[in-house]
Length: 213
Image (cartoon, rainbow, N blue to C red; front, side):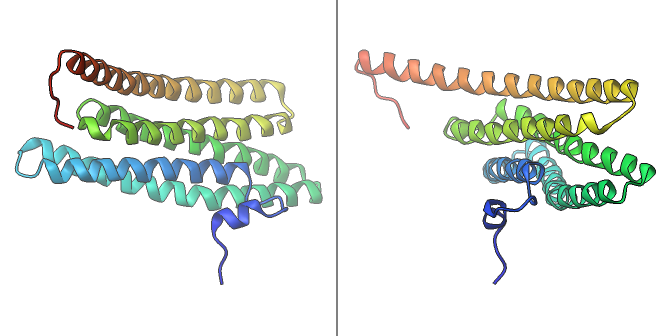
């Protein structure tokens, strides 16, 4: 029987490792985001343009889901290629393997950023009862973002040319910061909605008013 990804991740061997785990975490957040979008799509059927927006988001989510699945495999392949290149001692092969070992987690970060852009859009109009689930989805995506950055950063010292290393570090930082801005914006929006509803419910109970769930 084939082992699950989590079973293979827990085994005492180098791969799958942190990069694949980051992509897996991103896919979890994306799956939860898809659930929310599907619910909103069903609720908005017959509402004209709005239902088209949800349908388009579902298409984008499907594409991103495929990207995360491929990146889980690519990270393992990149690690194996890096080990092989270091064993062989071929400078050109090693240079290419190092770049791939950095590029793969960078692509995880870029994929997360696209998913966070969708989450930010969903946060503006999803129903109140979906806010908490969306916060969980954003949390998984944020963890995947930072995980990808950790792995890419760990491989940077393998770049021998200082100028190139600094350039790649700057590029990774730019991706990280732009995605974190989306994460913070979306989280702030959602927490604001939660607190607003909580305060409204509390005030209503104090006045003896009834609020529907």
